[in-house]
Image (cartoon, rainbow, N blue to C red; front, side, top):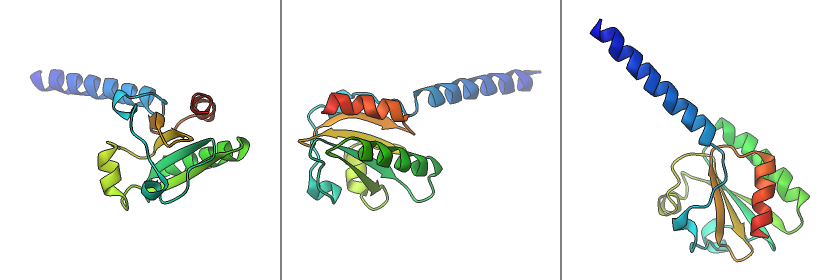
Length: 137
């Protein structure tokens, strides 16, 4: 009987964690430690956008990364002066550690000066990306 109770508790805890992870994944939010951090063309490997830059950290076998790439490319194509930069997390491990990137895809929205305005861990929705660009521009 004790084993059944332990199993039920573990299943309930895992379900709660999964629901929390699904609900919070992909949400664009501002983190205090990102407030003063700026990224430049030398760190990204490409020039910043004239008005804003969407930076995506991806990995080779990440399925949500493909959908995120398409979403960010569409948004960058819709908004003049916005560029999309995709970074392979495995190739830039030092930057990944410095920015505390814990999962892929992670999206950073940078303003024209390279300051991190918001970030999302997980696949963001197109409407959320457009709203975040409104804060960056």
